[in-house]
Length: 142
Image 1: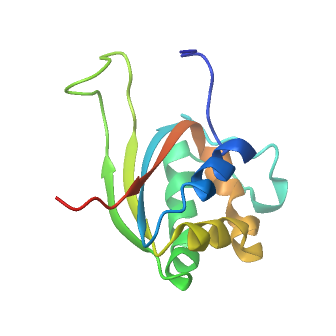
Image 2 (image 1 turned 45 degrees about the vertical axis):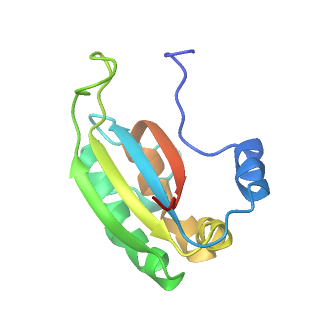
């Protein structure tokens, strides 16, 4: 495992593999987010704030702007919480924000990700995030 590698966006291969699972019904995406101290809008000057803001503030702006797109596709933000170090897991690994986002289906998730309106605001996420993990969870019956 390469701990120096950063993960900011899904790869084509990961998306293909998710689609090929043929999951029926809704999924819940577990998001683990590590934030930059100061947001970096150098790749997104059109949406950059007038003065520097924290990665946290940029990410919260992203959440507020992304929420209508999540809901438009029938999705729902189930939980957003402050993270820290693991109770079980590597003690040197820290995640600032943990989220659970429900999507009606994998195809609805892909439609959300490709929505032209969403594409215009996703730069806030990129400016805010230092590293991330996204784990799609399939509902399991006990």
